[in-house]
Length: 336
Image (cartoon, rainbow, N blue to C red; front, side, top):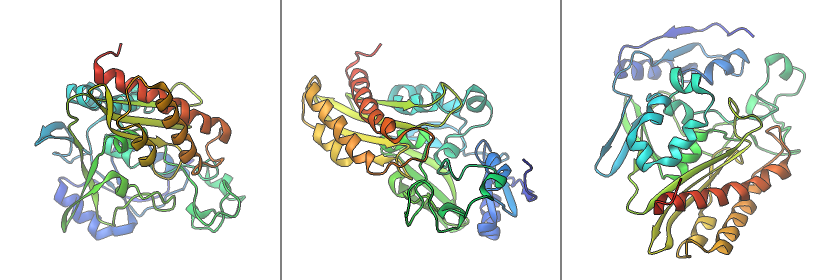
């Protein structure tokens, strides 16, 4: 597969990059690590006139704490997230998620945390070569009016398979976007729209520059779980992340998210709330919460990721239960 022709632009600093994006608007795409973008270009899923590389930009990398918030630059390499003591200590779910992204070659040489957050939604019927797709009527995500994953669907049913996005949803992340007009901050649940055709709340000319995660308090723990067809270099068939606090032997501040189900990781607000106040060793409550998570996530799932729908739905219960148990172990110092 051959990449379509485009003009390559490599701005020297952030302001130049923002000016370039503002000038070219929807005709431009951003190149960070390129692990997802280059594949989509080869498949002719994108045909931009301009590719704007961020390789020369400085100041968009690094991890630090500020005023009770852990700040991650969008261009921070995945390997830096893996090796960060701050992430390992305060955000174990994010570290676990990054460990499962792609393979060491991606983590160490190409991938960035901002790029993984902005991983496009995927579908078995869409992420194919141009030749393969040419034998079918275009789907919703390909500017058509058909969905092959769900008959008679009036919208795209592609799924978000970003490991980082699932973990960041459970951790309550905020996303900072910059443009020539200034900056704005969105909760990750608003940045990820849940719409397969347009999965990100990002305007032409905007660039993700920073991720902000609240520093967990005392007694906090988190976990990320994932099921794939292969042990590495594979997207999630389904994933789950759990963030919680343990207070006096009881659950507090629970956030459960499930990836690979909808066009954005699902924050399961009701399932999370059912666990609050229950004893951490109450297995019946943990099972009930995991079952409720399965019920709610199943409503968003369709046959679009190369595995049976029934299996993926069952795995939601399994992964959420594992995640809760592991997060409790981390919060109470009983892990390992």
